[in-house]
Image 1 (tube, rainbow, N blue to C red):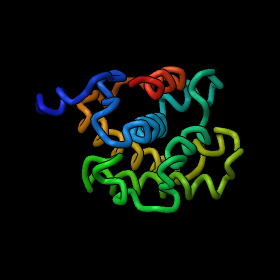
Image 2 (image 1 turned 90 degrees about the horizontal axis):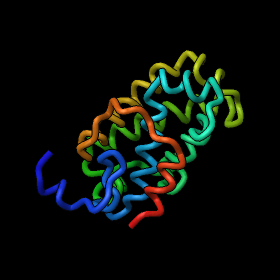
Image 3 (image 1 turned 180 degrees about the horizontal axis):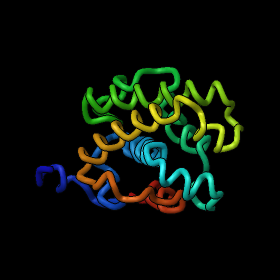
Length: 160
C-alpha cells in the first residue's frame, strides 16, 4: 500500500480506513459482513456456537445490503464512494448474489446450520472471501485477521 493512502486515514479499525472514502460507514458495514461471510471457521466457532457479539448470518447479510441496496443495485454504482475500483465492485456483486440466493432458498430466519449445510454455501463463502481479500488489501489490512465483534464495528461507526 502506498503511503499517500495511509496518510489520508485519520482513524482505523485494525487498519480499516474510517474516513478516506466518502461513504466510509457503508464500506465498514460491507467489509464487516464480507469478513464474517468469508470465514467458515468463524462461522462454526461464533455463529453455529451462538457466541454473543457477532450476530448471525442474517445480521451479516443485513449489513451487506442495508444502506447500499446491493440487493437491488449493482455495486459499480458505488465505485468512488464505497468501493475503490470496478474489481472490488464486481467481487462484491458476486458475493451478494450468491449469499442472497441461499438466503432466499432457506429463509432469512433460518437457523445458522441451514446456511452452513446448504450445498451452495462453500461457493458463497469463496465469493465473500474473494471480495473481502480485495477490500482488505486495498485498505492495507490483513485479510486473515479474525472478524471483529459488532461492538467494535459500532465504535468505529460512531467515530470521526
